[in-house]
Length: 317
Image (cartoon, helix red, strand yellow):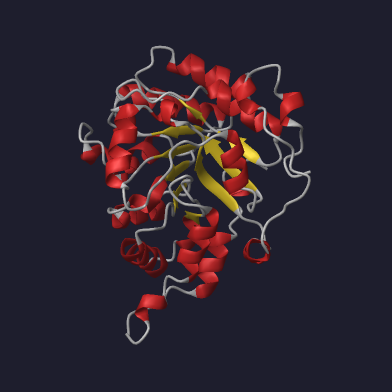
């Protein structure tokens, strides 16, 4: 049995949103079986419906990603099916007072509880919440969520703001990694400066034991992401969603030249991409260089990135 529990039976005590059928077998193509023959851990996946994303985010995403036709309506069934080829995955929603994003932490906990050997739940706490620290404590101690999804641009805060710092402080105290949006975005009413990963140099200095994942490899500020990752032992970057190939090649080259490829974590940013597509892009990253003298990304480094044990690196073992 793929997910380790009967959703209809084990989840009926909370919400019918999680009543999804049992999968009796993997039932995936031979291509996917070959693709995922070794361990893959996806550190960045979303579980939110369009209603939970909210109209502001949906409108901005639909406009910016029109050619990609991203379907933001992620149900438990769809999420589970999309991630069946990976061994483990981190899953979360995003909560934002400023822009009306709201995926209850209880919903993430319910989903993870149905197959705890597969998914790792992160909470989302808006630093503007008056009860932010209480919600962190509740989500960690009562719900069993193991990290925090944060976003200065979507939650409308500067990473050095005291409201954010109190969240960072509590996360460090409880040993909760944070995964933060640290890249460009498309909501017109947000401050682009707050997305720059260089701002996490100060955060990492203030909280040296806090494990931080800079999402989206800092695009387009990948050089800033690289120097922060290189400087701080507990700062990592994920490579999601990997469909900006020109930027991604340049980013990987910077990490390779400074010998910090080992600090990159595999991620899809589902539903914006999938693990299969990210693997394909990474393994084809050198293809456009054919016939040129441009430096290649080492194939061994790519395979190591795809199969990196993020579970242990983030302290979950």
